[in-house]
Length: 201
Ligand code: ZN
Image 1 (cartoon, rainbow, N blue to C red):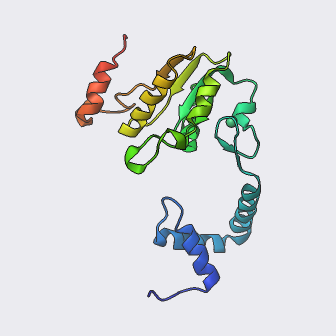
Image 2 (image 1 turned 90 degrees about the vertical axis):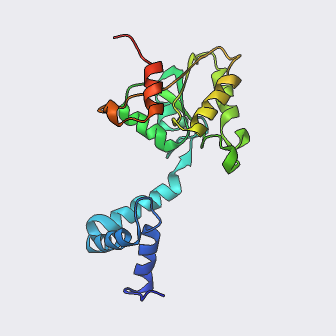
Image 3 (image 1 turned 30 degrees about the vertical axis):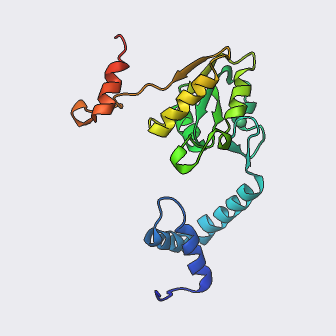
């Protein structure tokens, strides 16, 4: 067993930090030391923010986003276009699309994508509630913003079939050349999708 270099409280802090995505044991140790050194400027406010988040963060009953209000700030915003719902797999995808700030739409978080290999079926995702929202009279378009993976695209096709009788147009994100991408470095799958999805200049 490795020798402990600090008391149990500090070791526990390091172990907890090491569970965060992107942090291994070594960077967790560095982060813990940084927090301890910056106790007043960083550790105390962080502990307070974590405490408040623990008490207040909830899942939006409408769209599945996480926020401290329910319905969430996006669903409650009267300036959002109620005719468009962007479907994402995870809250991280919602946040990524919001950073792009192209659409002023509302969202629907599925909570994952269909994955027969991992035993994730339609009943494990928020698909029923999406179909119900698609029936609302103000909704005109469902944008499937799902990962360009086999599971993401399987989910997109499944949802498209389910929405066949709803009075909405179902669209998906374009697949193709990334911004700043050089053709020579792209894989064949991306290139063939880009050719098939070509648009007029
Ligand atoms: Zn919401």
